[in-house]
Every structure is written in C-alpha cells, then in structure tokens.
Figure 1 (cartoon, rainbow, N blue to C red):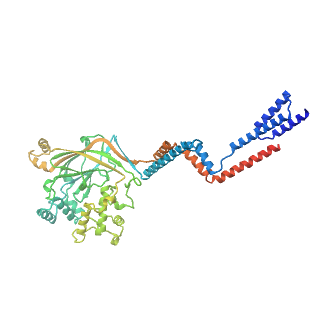
Figure 2: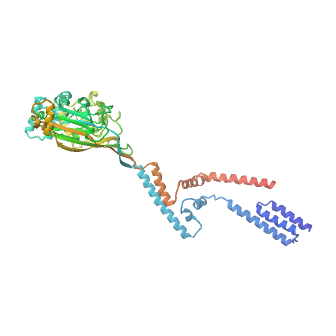
Figure 3: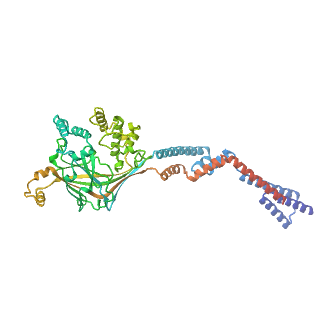
Length: 555
C-alpha cells in the first residue's frame, strides 16, 4: 500500500510540470477520488491512468499550439485575408467548400472587379475632363441698377457742317450707284483723315438733339450724358455711364414705363445726308463700364414714333481655366486684349474683337486705325515685335500703301478671317439685357397743338408734318425687377467624385474605405516589408514565450 502511494505521488509531481493546466487538473481529480474512496489501484489501472492523462495533455498541447501558430507564407496570408475580409464574395470563393461553388464565386468576384474598375476609370476620366454644370435661376430684387444707355444719331455728319470735299465725295459715290452700306464704309474711311475734334464738331450735338429727359419723376439733362466717339455713327452719348458710379438716383425701384428713362429727341432731319437713308437714333443698352458698339447691335427708334423698350437683366458667371476659357480681368500681361482699358472701360468680348483688329492692323500695316485706341505698349506686346522708334503712328488713309492695307484688313475682319474669335475669350462675369420693343404713332395732332401752345407758337398746326419726320420719343424701363442668374459650376466636386466611386465599388463588391485599409494592411504590413518585420516580431514573441516557460519550470 505504501509503495502504491509513493508511485501516485511521483506521478502527481510529474503532472504539475505539464504545460496544460486542464489535463493536470483532470489527473489530480482522479487521484483525489482514489484517496477518498480507497480504491485499490493495481499496476494496470495506474498505467492506464498515466497513459490517458499523458495522452490528454499532449493532445491539448498540440491543439493549443495549432490554434496559436500564425500563417507565415504569402500564400497562407492571402488565403487568410480572403477568408476574413469584409469585401463580399471573396470569402466564399476561398472557403473550404466544393470546387464548382468556389469557381462560380471566383468568376463573379473577378467579373464585378473588372466592371467596377471600368466604371471607376470612366468616373475619374470625367472628373479630369472638368465638366461644367449650368444653373439658371430667377430672383426678385427690391431694386435694380439702371443700365447705361447709349444713343447715336443715324446721320453721323450734319450736312452744313462738313467740308465741301467730304460732301462732294459723298455725292459723287452716291450718284454712281454705290450701295448705302458701302458708301458709309467709304465715308468712315475718309473721315479717318480728320482729327477727332474736327469729327466731333461735324457731328450732332446733344444739346441740339435732347428735347426732353426724365428718369422716373426726376428730370435729367445733357450733363447726365457722357460723350463717346464711334466710327460708324460719329457722336454718341451715354446716359448713366461708368463715369457716374455713385449716382444712386439711376436705380429702378419699380417696373414699368413710369419708372424708367424717357427721352424726346430731335434728330435734325433737315441735316441728313444722302448716305443716311434711315431717320432716327440707334440705342444700345449695356452694362456700366462696357464699351458700346452700336454698329454691332442695338435698337433703332424711328422718327414720328413712340418706341417702348422693356428690358430684363441677366447676370452670367462663367468658370475660368481649367473649366473654361473665360478671362477674369485684363492685367499687364494681356492689355492688348482690351485697348479701351485706359479710358476706364472694362473687358468685353466686343472690346477684345476690336482690339484684336487693331493688333492685326499694326502687324500688317505698321500703323494704327485712327478710329480705335492706339496703345503702343499693348500693341507691341500683342504683335510680339517692337515698333520703329518705340511709337506707333496712326495710319494715313490717303496713302497708296497704308490705305489699301487698312481696307484689306477691315474686309478680312468683317469676314472673320483674322482669327479674332479664337483670340478673344468671353468674360467670366457680365451682365446682359434682353429687350422687347413696341411702337406707336407719336406725336398726335392734339398733343402737338398743346405742346406748341405752351411754347408760345401762334398757330399750333404749323410744323406737325415736320415733327413727324424729325421728332421721336423713347421709353426705356425694366419689364420686371427679376434678375436672371446664369451660373456655371463644376459638375464634379471631390465629394461627388468619392461618392460616385464609392457607390460603384459598394454596389458591386461591398467595398468600403475600411476594406481598402484591410488591403493596405495585407500589402504593406504582411506581404510588403511586413514579411521581414512580421518575422522579427514573431521571433521576439517566441523568445519571450520561452523565457516565461523557463521561469515557470524553475519555479
């Protein structure tokens, strides 16, 4: 009996040094049960207990070791990633299941990866193309700044003011059957030989033309207009120009004819030349600070008529590079695109086209068109070459060299063969005004009678026929105080780009940012330099585990 107890105690001491606590605990419980119940243990039972305990301990240790052992090869790491990743479908393609099911899932995953990749590249390509989205909105305004209004007499020269040679020139070409448009072009070329002061004196004066002027209920006069010279129409006058930027009275607070500009004008019909077949005025409505070009557009108000012009304002905003080709402002690097800047006018498309024409005149004829600004520095910069002496002179139209050169370039410009349309981008911000025109007979006989009576005429019937061919009335007003806004915006922002890419990847693959982090972890930490660092990390923990085992054994 004593011998068997010593044997059991020896076995118990061996069990304490086992690594698996569960197996030792089981063996200890069996020994404890034997002692309490005084079971007679024979050598076969003892051997069986030891073998069973040892087997359990070894099995448990091997199992634990198998669970803790990491996968170290790249193939094993990829398999482990595929089994545990959050991306849909990949775990089913790599799971331990029948081959045909894994092949189907693998084909689905590969197919959707290709599809999602194609869609993603298309989205990125669209983003890099910088597409633009245009929005149009109408906003009611409590008040609107009244635009600038430029008026030009359809007859550029008064017949009794021009020199005899000019009058003979016009009469000769009209007598030989030259068309009116060609005749006016020849007159414009001929007038380049006169100074601007002389041309102004030969043209119509505002104090002779302006019969009545009111804005709303407030009177206005010639001092509210600024002078501007135009090649085709001569003297022109602008109401509410940029030279009066702080005049708050030129603001429309209500819509309708009674709250706009009302003009009664005398075009001096008896002074009309044969080159002026239409009697009336040309009216251009434009933004303040913008150069008016009545030869390129506008409304004609004829004599003997009441012309009602309702306007609506639109504000356009475009995007600069890389979304578009608009120009924000003219600086020292591109002054040749707006030769009118020195006169205080801002950049506009028409101003740039005229400036482009002047640049080509200098390049081809070595001089400046007298009807346009001649900025030597800007022209030399635009042409890319210096002028002789550093100064550019005005062209002499009577010269047999510069005259035909100037004429040829004008024809090329009219036919759009100088490339100015490509040279001039639109402004990034501009205001435009659409017009609706209605007409009525003016003045009536009774109105004319009362008007003549108040002016002290003895017979009110005298001059009614003449009034019908020389006088006119114009009302210019806002149809509505609604402002139309046309704004260009980037069609793709970074938020939309990420949303579209995420939508494609999420819909087809269940892919998210965290999935991308998982892939980066696999590529960088595990498969990349992580193969070396991971190995060192595991070796460190293995050495640390061995030290712990030794300390336990010693204790």
